[in-house]
Length: 331
Figure 1 (cartoon, rainbow, N blue to C red):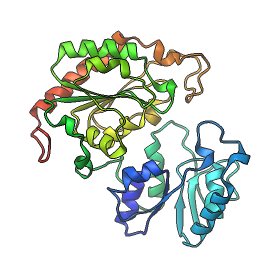
Figure 2: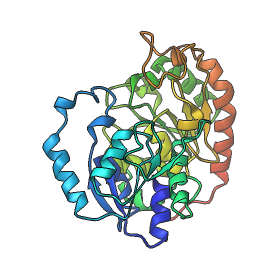
Figure 3: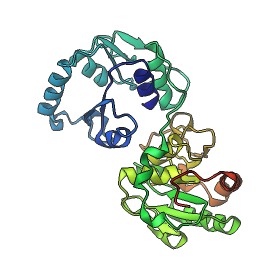
């Protein structure tokens, strides 16, 4: 969403953003003039989105009343979802921009055609901003210095370069097996000198890799996570939010991807790389796996990963060695 925010603020617009609480915590330091409204739409959850009787109807109605009182001239949703479009209409937004759905005709008055070719999710926000006559940047960008104060103190004496491995992902179908990562990280440590920082998933995925790490960071809050990713020399991750954060912060990131299209969900950064070899007749399943395990990942061998990751990491570590230190770094 940040390219759209940047474009609207540069045009001098008053911007209100309806976001989940974690998104506000992430973005508010970079966008202090935006009016943040926390909201987790019940139709955006992974499972149970159609259990209408469980939706928080009083809260929905109060939010609609609040939004109608603001009198928005323009409102955007990057999802081709008629529920989003109905919500914009109920909120009294005069110019309602989004991508058309067959059920959206009564609600959108500035609908755009959905592109036939897969493209990155951030391109949807960029397209909306351009349709409004604005000039957005071509990818999401976050300024690392704004988060640097939250770096964990146990990184203070850690020798450079830092390679961060974030083991998490929102869905289990996106996590490469720990044993595969163990083989890869063991091999990499024998090929190059670096300090490995492990960030296990809150569910525990990645804990078996603790003996390989120089530092383990458990239960990081969001500001600390962003600070670590922004200070890293390279990040290894899955198809996950931290991979996108690293890319937006300007950190080279290598992501192992499974059930989703890299063209649409891969990290956007000139130094980003994606390993993707689904080997599944049902790809892309978008996390609704047809099997008892995500074969798009469990059938991916460590040897196959090393063929791509090994040269990529060597290149990034050489670049890190030649990079001047930034003021405020822990080095």
